[in-house]
Amino acid sequence: MALCALHLQLRYREKSDGLVTCRDAEVPGSVVVRPDRKLDHGWMVYSSKKKDPNNPDSFQMCEALLTMLVELGKSKQQGKAVT
Image (cartoon, rainbow, N blue to C red; front, side):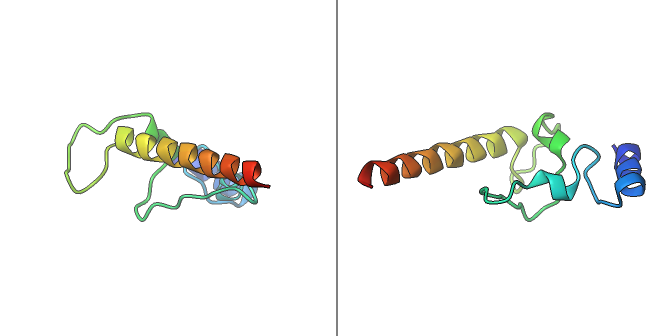
């Protein structure tokens, strides 16, 4: 990933995780989640071999993000039903 990140840095002068540049990672007007720790896009796909009870595993992060997405969708539907 480091080589891909370097390529994106040199070609586009943009920081990235090796897959997506920071500018392209966020859609204007969308809900954005910015974790306190540095995570790359590949982290969500691969589960960690070392289980640290102080850090969430990738499946826990996926579950939390999907739950947030469902709750956001429900609140938007309720807002449309009221108007």
